[in-house]
Amino acid sequence: MNNVRMDNMSWIEYENRVKAGAVVFLPCGATEQHGPHLPLGTDALLASAISEDVALAINGIVAPALSYGYKSQPKCGGGQHFCGTTSVDGATLTAIVRDAVKEFHRHGVKRLVLVIGHYENQWFVTEGIELALRDIGSDTGLEVMRLEHWEFVNASTLATIFPNGFPGIALEHAAVIETSMMLHYHPDMVALDKIPEHGPAEFPVYDIYPTRIEWVPESGVLSSAKGSTAQKGKLLVDDVVEGISRAVRYEFLLPEAS
Ligand code: ZN
Ligand code: MN
Image (tube, rainbow, N blue to C red):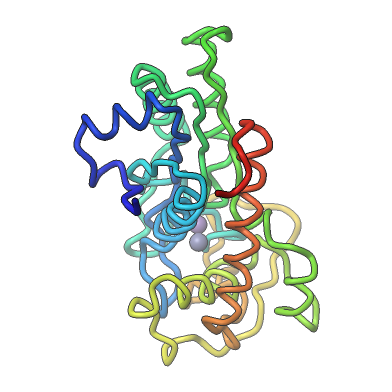
């Protein structure tokens, strides 16, 4: 059975699978510029595709992604000044996550995994989980895992993909990792011929508000996406899917791969 998407299931099928103990995945993305070569939905698309691969491996369910994220920051997402970047306040994201976690709990979900695909979301998603668990109470049997998918890329894979040194995940916005993963999952959405030719952005260690938009490359890409390939995407995705599957099995005491 390959249907892991909640939005493609009837409520009866969903209920049966939740009652059988299925792990539910909630991708947490954004609608944010990703340079001239990637779509605005990249963060939600990747978090969803990775969640679907993991759910296939462990017979889980993937809920519809949260597709608006916390405000894009200049040093890791380019910033809020790009047309198309559509963000919500931290309190709004926290409230959505809090409500969604409580709804999954009402459905009877015991094992929930929030898969973050947008760097800026982390603490607001965390706060939503914390507040939901405080509302629900701690003895209900609900456990929630929160993760950032890129943390599961192995050091050896990074060394292979970045022989001259890894620029760091913040500067990887719309760069080799996201572009290669998109070439793996959604090659029809990647415009390789539009990848801009410029080196990595350089930022001071501090921030200034309002944003100094002149610090941010006009393309919205923070380090070059040149050299992105579907093969690199597969290497990255294999690490991430295997690592998340292993973590979920281990923490939630699921049997090993069938
Ligand atoms: Zn992104
Ligand atoms: Mn992002």
